Image (tube, rainbow, N blue to C red; front, side, top):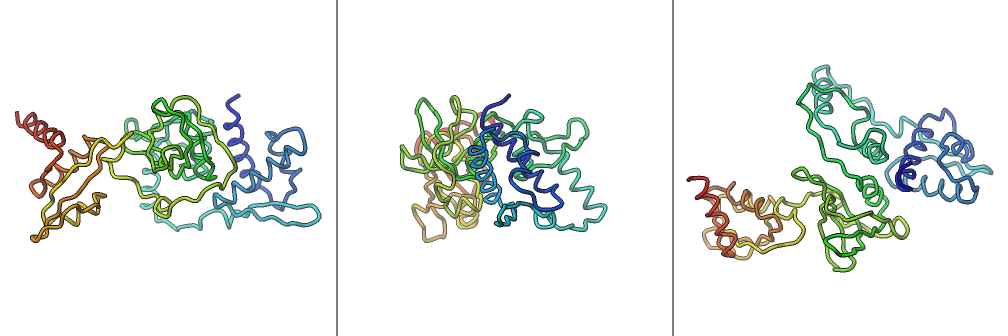
Length: 309
């Protein structure tokens, strides 16, 4: 049967399909006959239908509403679908291969899989050569979280033994894990949550459209790898010479603690993932040096000595 949230997402996808297939505008009653997941009570069904239309509109779906004596609804394919990019045979083959080598590991037919397709995933599962598919991890919470992010609806979840209320800003997949970025109402600060460490269910609370995402989040800028952890463990001091100072700052290490006369900088880098910070520091080769704190410097030295040994 699935959860109530699963049924709502399935209903949303079915409604979009019915609107796209309509050759002429359809009334709410006609659409509800085609989407048998609405409540039997007419008042409840009317409210659910109105919410669904609002959600589709917020997701960028061009729902046309004719507010006549009996309102009608439709989505024109030419307005919803992208124009033909007129790919060459070689370009089409390359695109086909790209789609064939990425798969989202979600149960076939689940609401989360349907929403993935609706919000940008491949419309079909395309067969790929054995061993060539890169699988994005799935998780039972993804459907609920996608809906909350798209609908700008607050959520309640348990994380590291604490109950949190969060304004969900965006989802991203980094290094094989899904992360939720948002504003924690209890701690009054921006937080990053690893989805597979959420305890129990994710509960949507309050109305949709309840908050505005920051402009930087709307651009979907992913956080740097060294911030992909539960909490900041320490702030590292990283010296970078003049040749790579701008490059290091462009990777996300933007807080300059000290600007030296020779053009080099000392960066203050908050670290939640020590291994990712070590990889970043070592990628700069002899153009950088970890100055502190002692445990951060020792971790890099120990790794280098073990590697040489």
